[in-house]
Length: 235
Length: 83
Image 1 (cartoon, one colour):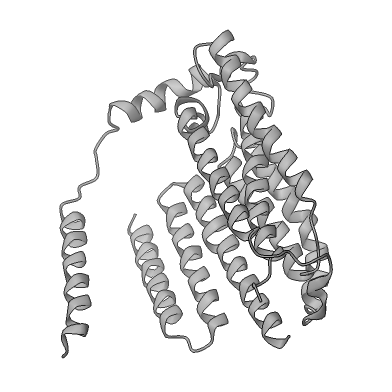
Image 2 (cartoon, rainbow over the protein chains, first blue to last red; image 1 turned 60 degrees about the vertical axis):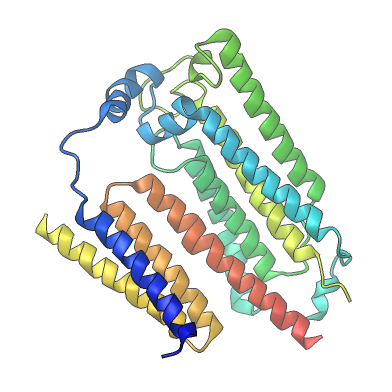
């Protein structure tokens, strides 16, 4: 065995040892720790959200979510910046290649509205059922990707995508600042009434914020995908 | 409880074999689909472990968006290769 083969094997064996040590010393906690039991007990009276995970992501850890959305925005902006260096083909320039199949085109025409609707359902119901802004936004973006797969010459309006993206981001920050003014702190959800537990208009500002996050994430992923589609190799 | 353990072991084995398939497959398309299958099995595993939110993220991004993106890029390579 050569050294070139031996080094990766030794590295993999070391990694395996680390993971085995972690795994063998793992014992599940018998009870929730202090933070977890606080969330489990206090989430429903404090935020009125049925889905505790959403309440933690949007309210207790709302600043982290704002940071995550900002990271995604920076990624989309950098992808757009790097790809704008190569020249963008005009609309329908890609139509000279192989057309996509009949099956894919018909299937996409049927499935895209359903997928978009499901994505919207996931982020609107984020405070009631599992899922939320990030998942719904990714589902919306996969509908856009399906449209691009079915017709590579399809062009989306960059202006519309960036308008949705920036107005959602701006409204998100304004809602957070309103929480600072009228409720307990930045991104507090109690600027709106908590409503009936378990109904769609409940949990204060959480559904509103998650719809904005969903739109923002969907627009960001879509802008990454369209800039990937619309550039061609430098000749 | 024992049923859940067996189901977890079956899922772990299935995702391991999908990962091995993704490494060994000769066709790129099969490899991409197998890599998506790993994410799909992982998301079922998260569902079993009572983390439906994580399962949805894994299914939407890991197995949906990433697999689509790979297929999309492969389509572009094929399209530009013919020109």
